[in-house]
Length: 164
Image (tube, one colour):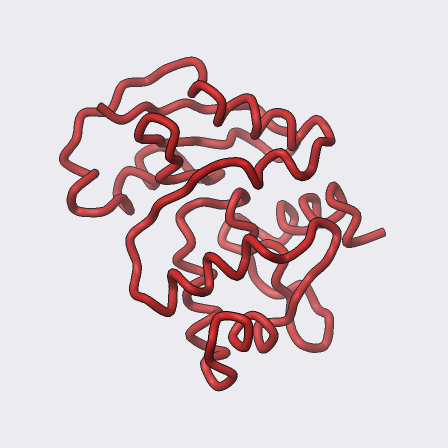
């Protein structure tokens, strides 16, 4: 059985879905939205609403309380093609307080020419902000888009010290 929880954060409710100690989805939209994006194997499983998900909830709340490295300890899993998986692994290597361009992300994920594909993988990331797609900006330094809105992206980057 999967577990679902939501937590109040400075930028709104963060919804979570986990399979024991593995986070399958996280985001600021709604629980229904996250459920609709689960893998075909997970979407048919029962989901129990809980107040918090052991360890995962604690680490996320620690992140919002200022322990910016806390979310690095969360194990994650989401469906996606090989290049998307490489992008998501690379995203987790962006240091707190730093940003990469989409071109840098594509290069680190294994394909210099796949800048658009790297952007698409960011857009399809189902585990934000734990897989920190908010740390990717346009080549000129502009913030660019964010699935949960530029205001949330900007807040997260300020929280992490990447913006003054």
